Length: 106
Image (cartoon, rainbow, N blue to C red):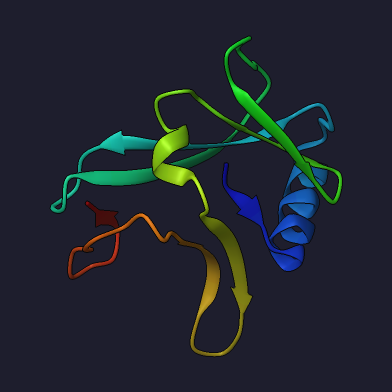
């Protein structure tokens, strides 16, 4: 299961509050696509399937579908807020290579 850093969980919590629906969960998935074969997908989701893997991080519910779970085992969602780089990134020990743009992996 993917985990969230403290800063990432705080930022996700802030974004969910801005949506105005505190029942939303952060869904993290891996989908076929991109130049290296797989890409990440993240979005807020109000529908949680019975077979989804769920976890809580600092008050943020994170859900992952069964097909994506093995690809995200041990991964960490980070958030950076700096001059050179701002946004979410996933540090995933399961990745063997990434594409030049950094948007897909295998």
